[in-house]
Length: 138
Image (tube, rainbow, N blue to C red; front, top):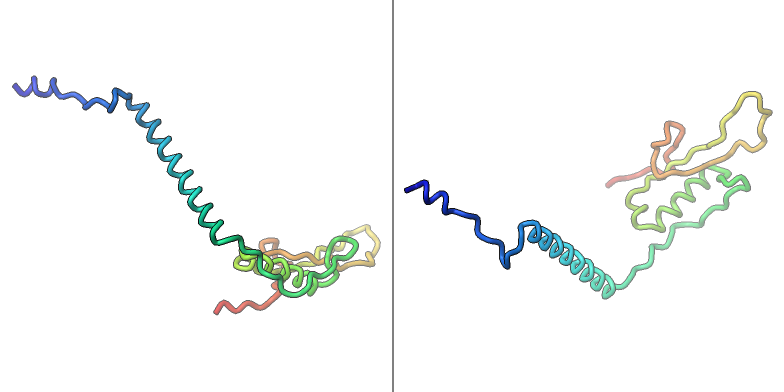
């Protein structure tokens, strides 16, 4: 009868009598070993190609003032350009901006040094950041 057929159906046993939890653990170990093997293969391939040194930076790195900032916007922009062109990652992602971080504060006598220029790879700092170089995306 059809009832007896349904009762006789059982799940096939796991190979070697292993439980399903043991099989899942074995599968995870196999995946981990495969990932390690891929990493080792990539490492050997990179060794064959050899490490490439970073690119030469463009221009000279400007000196900072004794306060740790740059004296002019041009110096801050040049420092950004120097850093960005010495790194492949920065070259592709850095758009140089500069800002003067000196702000007038009430009740403080007039400061003699009002030029404290800093650079950044973007204008996320706000509207006081000015683009250093005109960019042609073509």
